[in-house]
Image (cartoon, rainbow, N blue to C red):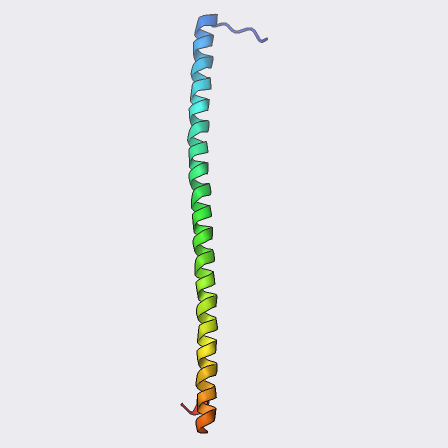
Length: 82
């Protein structure tokens, strides 16, 4: 162990203070990390829901376009002339 010039009681107090500060910083970082993990999870779920909704609506639009085209062909009118 290295030789220190300060008294052992002062060193103990300084080391304890340093340790406590380190623990506090680590706890704050852990809380921030946890909050960010939750945010990423929530945003990922939200994005997946919106993506599913967009795919569903696109499919519905395609079905409606096909339905319009079928009805137009029955009447003898091309859907492109509309």
